[in-house]
Length: 392
Image 1 (cartoon, rainbow, N blue to C red):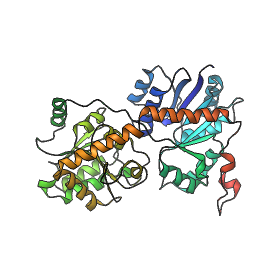
Image 2 (tube, helix red, strand yellow):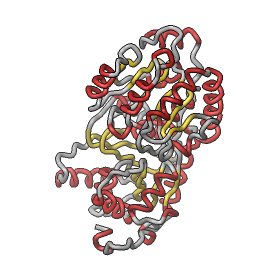
Image 3 (tube, rainbow, N blue to C red):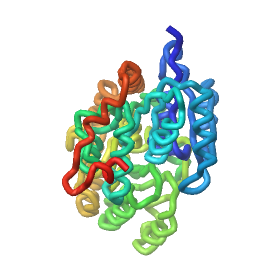
């Protein structure tokens, strides 16, 4: 049998969790069975070059404005010419316009849609669109049970319609002690200090302000030294918080880093204070790197981390509880070592790239056997919403 043609679609290719999972999936797919390509609409990053070096064809199809008829026609032409068997969309915008465009193509591919977050602050229109997308999908992949359950509840889709495929991560080779020491020195960590890292976008949902507040609660002699790797709209506000709290000697802003995984290997722990989270790539990468994780007890974090066994959990936005976790790891190096070892075991058994890729490909295979959208008849009538309104 000839390899099947697969198109992965996302709106933007900035460095983020979904984009890294797309890169890992493209690296891991069996090329004797799949010919994968990537389509994105805006905001390229170095990941595009990484994907092209894998031999994957990348399409950049700019979308101008919320509704762009020319974009839709160009996308329809691409689908028609590419004769794809499956399109896997990774964001609401990608899902919506793929569902619409498939209606214009004589030989429409099977649509696999995604759930990669909790979306707790999204407006009702988001959920109506998600419901419409579900009605056009042959399968829906969620990266955590919490994500599937939240979408089922708010979009009115039976939870049985979701395939839960946890994110995968590569386990790096251990760093030599000299390289680890050089990395710690290179980011400015003073000798003898416990090194914690935050890796992610500086945006409200990641809640880095909670981490700054927690640092300010600790006496100077009990504070770890913290490196913040990432950038975003909150950077100026966070810098002002650090200055006002007198934490300039304890917190360093590194900006966006391509070597974030190496920093995790050099660090003693990673902090993930998000107010909502699907399946966090940063937490998984830290666990794979042998770095202990402190995370808010939200969403997929509770599926990754058993508190006190392979990491520490604290209530969302509770800076006092987070400060206690920081102090525990700062005072007890053996605790961090034990948590990190258990975390690495969890990754090896449940979160490899091979496992993620095989599970995703299995969903593609099942989609190809479907004559229609098996999700459509499981879209539920929600109390207080007419069918027409619910399905757009």
